[in-house]
Image (cartoon, rainbow, N blue to C red; front, side, top):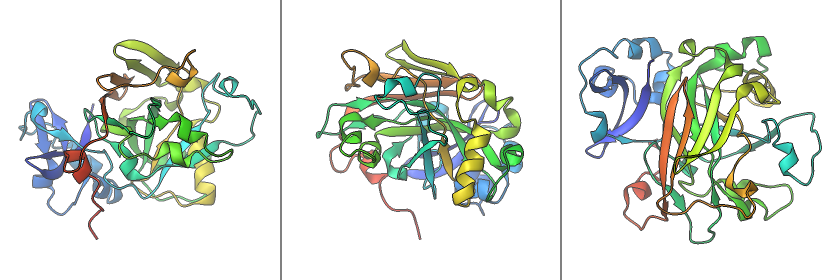
Amino acid sequence: MTRLLSYSINDKATFGVMGTEGVVDLGRRMTDVADLQELIAVDRIDEARSHAGDTGDHPAEEITFERLIPWPGKIFCIGVNYSGRAAEYADRTDAAYPSVFVRFPDSFTGHQRPLVRPPESPQLDYEGEIVVVIGKDGRRIPISEARNHIAGLSLGNEGTIRDWVRHAKFNVTQGKNWEFSGSLGPWLVPIDEIGDLEWLHLTTRVNGELRQDDTTATMKYSIAYQIHYLSTFTTLRPGDVIFTGTPTGAGARFDPPVWLEPGDVVEVCAPEIGTLRNTIADEFPPGSPNAAFNSPPPQ
């Protein structure tokens, strides 16, 4: 399985591929490519994959995983999409179209980085998801062609501040965009190494306890349909990201609710992709590594 990633070492950001003996630094080998996002845009995944057998440049334990796609142009999230999710809400209307909202890049961090609980609310919750990374431009993409527009799959924890989601009747933006409240990673598995998109098995564990367990077969709106629907009103471009929905079992649905606390460990897993692991911490003080990661993208 090819695993492409964004990472930093010695405070230098780069991108690479997991090899048999550590991480292969693609930034050294593909000097005309800025990052993983550009690698996808210029359609050079096959070239990157060819370096997976190279001698590793860094032991995996020495790198810092960064957000998989450094600054996606668009991040879409699909809500209430798995079997049983609609029953969790007072309004159980069977909508004819997907629930869609957007997130900002700096609301996510990378694999093995802490998710941040802000001082304004203790209600930090998890949402494990399969994540699609777009690989080719497309507008009004037919369902039958959707897979051809995917660069690969990754995993996400669409961390949410629950009480802020409910500040307004028709708006979840406030609760979905706290800095570093979610994660994206650990790596990208190219789409040609993924089997049937409708039989991916997704689980989420908190401190080892299984909380979410489902397959994409129960999605109301398939991954292919999501790409079709979103591309109807906007052009999907390489590096755009789609969080495809989360199964039942988030902490808000317990009685009483169970929120994430500092020291907790959340693991989102799909055997076809890997495991995204994050701890929980209270908000970072100024000058912390995550604070520095919030700098704007280069112009």
